[in-house]
Length: 192
Image (cartoon, rainbow, N blue to C red; front, side):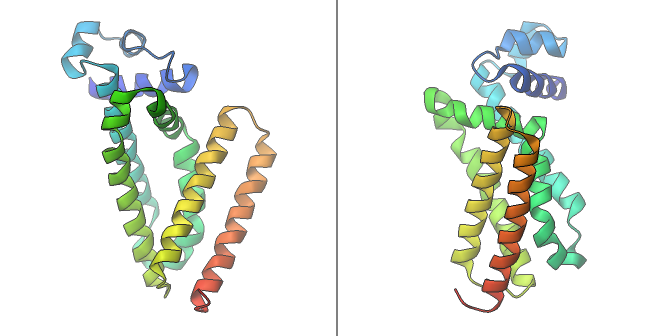
């Protein structure tokens, strides 16, 4: 039942955005009664936080599936593509809608940051380990690069939501690849 509710929530968020998505709409889309839904999630905030947790867990599984330990150097280049696939998909866009809604929703703002921080910590640790395996050691620069790339990818996903031309987005993704390769060379040379 939870899987149905998560999938229905993601679809509703993708189609209607956060403010227009209601628990009644999600229950109807999932094909469950409001009472059955209330048994699992008594408020919209509870449901939305659980959706973010679910998307993050699925994203972690996605990364584990696509990042084999033997090919670490190749993974650094692939990370942008993998992260883009996760962030720009329906689940990733649903998470963006929920994250952006935090500003106007005090309950969401109080409950969501620990979930986001947990995912961010895992992602940073994964990338730090990959960077160390390729000989990159400047942790501050690696962390700053992760923040920059994640912000850029989230921004591009928002551009996709508002209808920016796909070619423009692809051009920006190509530039991110170029930037990452350049940064890796700088870090490997020990310049920063």
